[in-house]
Each structure stands twice: as structure tokens, then as C-alpha cells.
Image 1: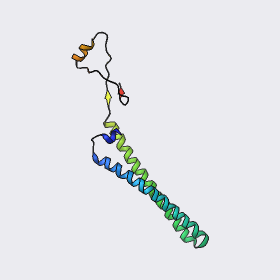
Image 2: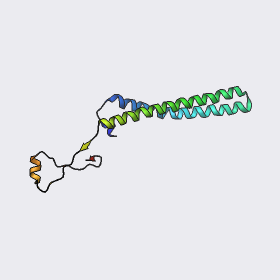
Image 3: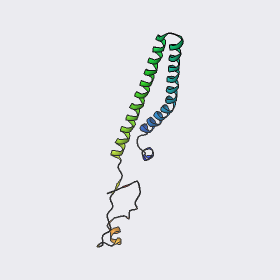
Image 4: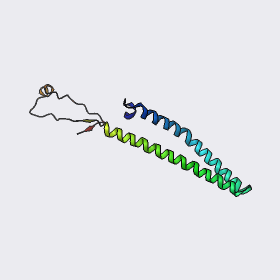
Length: 124
């Protein structure tokens, strides 16, 4: 979610949103189309020619191959973008422990802010 809130390139966010919308529309359409092709193939095997049944089975295989290829390529692309974002947008806070020798008012004079821990931050 932090990646989506980041004011970085809007093109990447539009691409992710577009791919999610396509995935939500294409998945049920591919499933229904594949099921209809297989039902037609079964009907043609029982009542009609085997050539049409083989053609429908080949169409189903081609449909699911293209769908899986698009899904894997899209997923890989977005994972690569996310990993690149994580590599370039690391959030690290250096905590300097309070020393017994340096009073807290001197720490503020040295420019050492008091730091509150956030559960999402990495402590080094």
C-alpha cells in the first residue's frame, strides 16, 4: 500500500490498475469460454464429427495458454517493478542510544531528535 501512496511515476500505478481490471474481466471470460469449448467438444464427440471436437479442444488449449502467458508476464512485470521500488525506496532510521555521559538536553543541542519507533520501520 505504501507503494501505491508514493508520489512516484503514475504510469506504473495506471498499468497495475489496468492489469487488475483486465484480470478481473478476462478470468471469468476465459473460464466460461473454455468450459463452453470443452462442452462443445464433448457434444461433437458424441453426436458429430471428431474433427470439430479436436478443433474445439485445440481452441481451448490455445485460449488457456494465452491467458496463462499473459497472467505470468503481467505478474512478473509488476513483481519486478515492486522489487525495484523496494530497492530504491528503503526507509531506514538510525537510532542512537542515549548515553549515560550525554544528558538529553545536550543530545537535542547536537541535533539528535527524539525518535519514536514505528512498526513498519527497520531499526539499525
